[in-house]
Image (cartoon, rainbow, N blue to C red; front, side, top):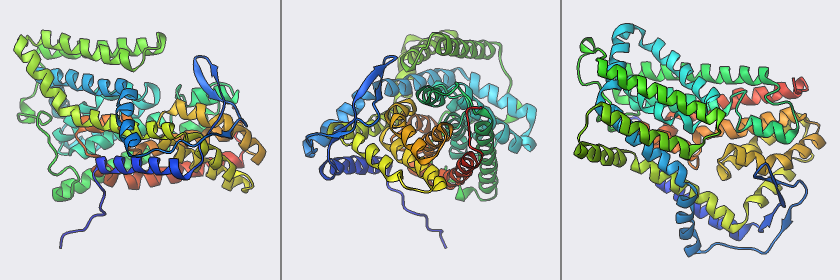
Length: 462
């Protein structure tokens, strides 16, 4: 008897439903806004400044106008998806990554493939924790090649790379975008309280590594139960027996240029504050450099570029579609209303319930404001004073915000970076949800334990 699975709609249907809900909220909720001030070039909410304004309900045409508005807002993320896809297309054609993965598996042996999964989960987690989120987008297809080479599937590849990057980035003790912004708003020492956050991040990555190995063993025993069945693996599978793989001198040069370029990109990110558009430009330059090293003809340049774009185009489309939800909420002017009423709902709760409730509030807000720093600037000026009235330390409020933002990133269809990385693994969002949701609940439970501990110990700045 065939096992029945819980029905999950197509990602386009999920996002369009969320867009309709955003439109409905503009008719149900009063429009409102907080006053904002410009600080260090970014808008910050003024606590206690919320006021209702004239309603601006969205009608049918407005909802469809939110679509181009969302694509316009997400243009930089959309292009980095295309640029990274093109760059990896040239890497794929060069054969350098395939030969490197084949040689690695040949050296370590298939007997150590579970160890490979564990180690690579922590490697990608460390990249998320210390390097960033979209900065790692070019690394995701490497996990796809590696997973298929050791007998896994594309969903396992997403678990090794996308999940690990998301968990590492979301729960990083030194995340400049979330913790850095939060500590600045809370006037706490930068990256203080790192011990509890480090323990939480390591615990979550350990659970993820165990989960990935468990899934891997399951699909080895029963391949027909794998969530990667039927996914397109063209260009990601090894083309010859493991014993035949070796790195050629040209492969070595291509990989050296690739690694050197990534190091240079990270230098630009941390020293010169480069962001997504700079990274996209680097990926385009790297694609041309690899093509020249591989001695591709002019026609091959064109063919590889357009083929690569066709592979990642669905993911790029989903990024823009997801951003249209945020655009609709802003057009209806109900985002601040939701934040205001959620913060009011926390008042009067017992101390531990208030801390967990604040985590829940931040989780809900993450679906409306997928940007970590954007969510901090919109919610923390309101919630920090609320937390102090409830008896929570500022550090606990920041921890609740980090967990609410970071853990829900695993299942947030409105998060452009997540959709972009999944598209590079060629994993549809509905299959991703089937794979990741049990893990999401487990990490959420671990995170709530950390929140309870923070309340019990009076979590302070050090």
